[in-house]
Amino acid sequence: TFLRRLDALLTTTDEMPTLAVDFEGVKLCRHGAMCLAQISCSADPGLIFVVDVYVLGNSVFSFATERGTSLKWVLENGFIRKVWFDPRNDVDALYHYFGIQPKGIFDLQIAEVAVRRSKGLPVRYVQGLFKCLLQLDALKKSEHEFAQQLNDSGKKLFEPECGGSYDVFKRRPLDPTILVYAAHDVRYMLLLYGSYLQ
Image (cartoon, rainbow, N blue to C red):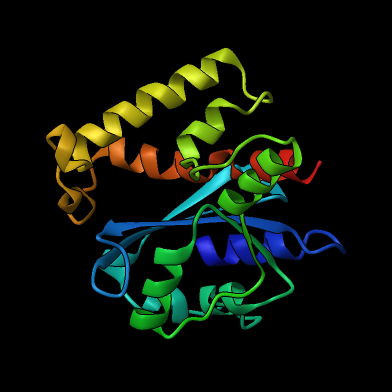
């Protein structure tokens, strides 16, 4: 299962791996619906878990492996670094719906602002994940193009301004474009993290 694989990844080296984390939902905060959890691990960054929180509910966080590792334990463990892009609404929802208080968070959005300021650039606003990915030199042109295409396709399905509806995250079976969109959100977060630490 996903949790056993994640547990194995967390114990593959003496050094604690870093996780990339994101959640999708409908008006995601204490008043919305959490639908998907996406996780990638530095021990195997090509492997991305997308977990159906909407269908599985609290059991996603409370189910534990034989060693006692649960997703709640992982999120609340301050020794496991969680790389997140603007985690405010996700953390709000986790606390109010599931009683989870994540620790060990590294906010990529704030880190990007710090990088711009360190270069003497003006900072009038924060950038979104997609714009940060487009500025990531480690990505090939084809990866930038795919990110652009996926961003546009996803927004057509969930952004009301583009003719979509956030309820698409609650529909089952899940639209394949939404599944890929969700996975893509964490796919390059660890690369961003590495580039912002330099």
